[in-house]
Length: 178
Length: 440
Image (cartoon, rainbow over all chains, first blue to last red; front, side):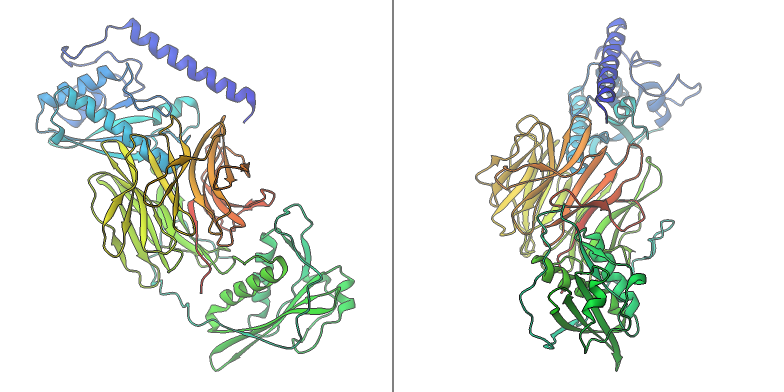
């Protein structure tokens, strides 16, 4: 990789970070006390598009479309970013509303790391999400974790945007949804 | 070379390999004299040695010569001379070659041989000649079953390599690896095994779950590897001769990165609990595990020193992934990597003189080596993504996986000088290679 490409990548990364921070700053952040409701305000999340009509409340589709089932991490980091907090707040409130739902947190890493280290990193990310949900009142007995390391990318690309999408914690519903 | 069919995994064949009696006899036709020619494996930039390997006489004779030719050529240390320019034909192992005929085509060494099949047994006699001193350097005879002809060819390759370089050979070996098929999303990963030259590929799992990090035992035809399913991970032991497969047990979190101790009696591995990964070691007889690290950083990718007294591993306890060494009881931890960049996947050479690793610096990945005290770091490769080095049993060659941006991983080899870099003789996509010890 040439120096200029590297430089461009780094610039792109900085720009992405700046944009997401700006997005966060310009929107009211739903705090822990705010009800989830449809269309939560986390526009910087590269998640699903606009909500689909006639989604059964309490269903997996409801969770994925109206709440958001992924949060994203910075390179080699596992702390919950400010743009992920509102998503996880919404996840925890949804999970409290539907107490029979069981979830598995899947930690994922981008391909810019070696296989075993990325498994460890994904485990840290999954655990960060788990701890956050537990801190918001979700019973730890309802949450399992697994790391897929870099084995389960959701974006096949090799751009910084693709890497960013692949560094995530995925909350997968494993049972109890409507 | 037969390519591994990528479309659909074949069923696990009984891998009770015919490791049957490969017998070796020394033939004392001539007294081996001091070699006039030698190949220096420490100088990868030397001119490869011109060597002639005409088709052996008898059944499979041409095939055996071809396998030997491929092995020696791929080492980068030998330059086989095409048979079309050979002058002397139909050599007889019982008589000396016509040395002027071989000098005329600039051959410095000559390997000739004869195959005979008697009573269901395959016997291969071969000779290695130094053309300029007109001396026989080797006169050996291998006996085996006819279907083992490739292994006989690998044994002869090892004998020639060892006689001319002074280093042990590495051709009568196998590679266990992860065959990858499908796109970058939902890729299928199947445990596979092949000879080091890509022949005899076969699958060991059915591809319905992720497999990673296979490793050979140094003492038996056994491997350990990790499986990853949404429900969690597991570490397995798998005996290649009996096809017996067993888990090393249940753990509260994820388990991964298994490695045998050099005596085959223990497995070191990582256990993750609450997001933190530490290194444990299990005695395979008693099945008792001991925890070796208890740091809040990531501790993984353990690899034993050849004498079993030390373990090199990967930890980010200092803020970024680096290489550390500890005694095999967990005491005496010290960092050995101090260069700029991220160091992972340490693998101790079976000879003991180097530790290979993956280094990530800038936007690139490298396979490198350093002394066990961290000195003499050298980077051997550079690409978009190189990782997972594994040592040939003689500690002179490394296999690793390489991905170009957006492309599938491929297996490559590089020698320890970094000068002999080439794709491994496997046409498919593969990752996580592990080199076997020399077969018996």
